[in-house]
Length: 372
Image (tube, rainbow, N blue to C red; front, side):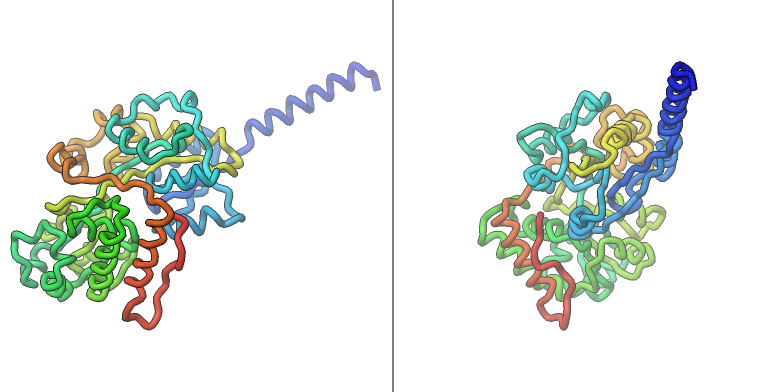
């Protein structure tokens, strides 16, 4: 065969193969909280990038750790809580992000970014804030009044942590989020301490209070409290703002409150693991999520506040003007952002958590150690 013809045919094969690769469907592995993105937003990303998003969910930090550290899993984008970012970056488990690849970066809220940057590592940016919110109380006000809770305590952590009031609330059912740090935060706030304290005595006080409290609750579960509150099977829950608000909508007896004493404020972020097999597509996904109208749609879908300042003009008025979703300055002043725990404090807190979870039970299921 003529050498020129062979060269032409080879070039044709290379072009054909390149077109096939370009048109090949890509896969993006995402690890996120369950139902934490508007499904239509994902579908639009898949269509735009000829990609399939494999959306793997987790319910709590322990499950996040299990799935992230499983050597068979290689995620491209993860959505961890900001307070664990420092540990992930120190362990070289997530990449330093190239801000130049995120054109909407300057559209993030200054206050949210300020809170987040206090928690990120000192060597570059390792996450982009996605949503933020509070952990507070969901309540069936009518049932609690019937159980004997006075009106002046219906906006207080005392319903859960005062022994006498807790017994009354337990008569109509208490269910708690299965998250160690969130419940420690509530106990510490009630005791008048910072949720980020490293004082041994203060942490021990909170651990003892949680041990007493858990003896009176029906269960701890990260999702079950939602339908049970909606169906009036429980009257007092501790959980995430948007999750509870989704169950209270249209029911005059149900409400989500930020307790008078204050509450913890959290930020969830988007990060790219070091072992991502498709980091370029991961950047495209994060860019997609940061677009103003996309971020607003997710905020409307979830009833959580977006971290994108540029999205606020597109957020539904009903969502934007709900004080427990987008708190005003007065409410914000009662909130405290959760910060990373040092290893010594984490170990002490986890020992107390295991003790609280397992005391008085014939068996309990809780990891004996915690990476975070």
